Image (cartoon, rainbow, N blue to C red):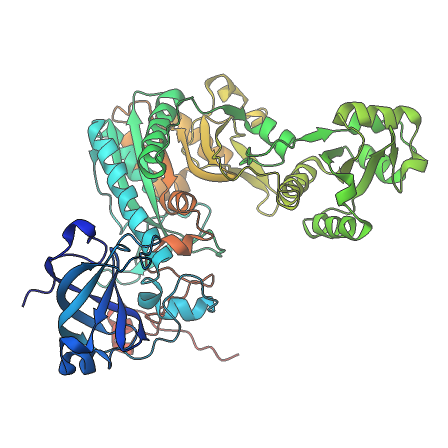
Length: 589
């Protein structure tokens, strides 16, 4: 049989008088004065169906048995809705179908929750019945936006002479950072594949192979603790280019974002994205992914208090720490109760305390003003550019921690004071990252990005002498306070790669065991190359104005990495374990 001539979002007033066939799910039904109205839903929209007892008693009685989520096919005539009954909120709101035939294709149990957009349902229940949750308009639109995003990305790269190349999902375990997901080998018992955390090494080898412009939309896997913006399996847009510098990769990335933005948002992004050093981002915004949709920056006040009598500040200065603060308008919006909330907030983020000063009648007021000299008060006002009815929040401590706490406070105040312009999107490049950072737990240097990132040429000689001063040829793209892409120019010389491994405490033998195939490849004419990877899920989340990555993934995991719909991870049989040469340890204490 023919199930449909049109979809449920297609019919308009110009179809008046046509006999059509529609199929879909019963969204709801209403009985008005003997007329039965059914809203029929499919992926494309909703169409109102009218069952009139005058069309036939059998048809009407059959329609009266319909319930929510029944799958039906209806044949009928397109009529204009009566005057005053047009629904302007529906794309098909000018018309309705007078039913002539009804075929019930499948019945449905009563859903565990209503299939409607605004409904308060526990997240775990929605994930268990994800196929029902995806019928809701908002979720359906998120998945369709994701589909559109796939097409835009592929079209862009094919138009720009990039080759789309797949890399393996079963690869050698080279754990750096997050834990690998391991896959046991049946043929080689006791040996394991790993699922890739990214195709990093493979795409570098593709450059060595001569494919100078590569991309793929690829699944990646990391066995790490989760939160709302992380999943154990995620998708990224992976890009690599040969014979390029940072600007070449960044230009391609900007053009991709502009194309995506235009086709999905319908708006032009004409100007180049601004660039900011990592150090400036940290010292002004307390973050390497600052949200620039509002103008609130950190002011360093350490010099102001060099001779202070306030012990909490003087002890921080003696300990080589810093004193810094944020100045915001609207001191009258901060009652003592609200200030206590702000204090609790910064303490929860690691601060020992919070100092606040209100600018009232051309002077400062607050609990510590009795310890401050006139010079200190005046310089605080000058440095923070404070005005009457401003309030200054000050945190003191170790430099990195203090900037981080103030960065979190900045975002808190931005929300509380409604400073964010959510009608706009802000894009920003962060550059000049430190190449290395010292891990005190591991008692060694670790790569801030990954061990294949090239140092800035002029800093190479500092690798062994002053490693903390070496900057990386790395760059992150930030959208509205979210990192949506990160990349770098890679090391393309085996000798330099070995030096970096040594700085990271990776011995020659360990480097050979983990990365020997890359080191060998670098000896066979590796070109200068670099690339970037976009977080596809996060980009989709931001474009959809969604609250979580789960909202834009068809079948996501929970924050504890469970798939509630299919029950994974799940036990396997002893036979399966035996075939792999594995056995489970007893859980007995």
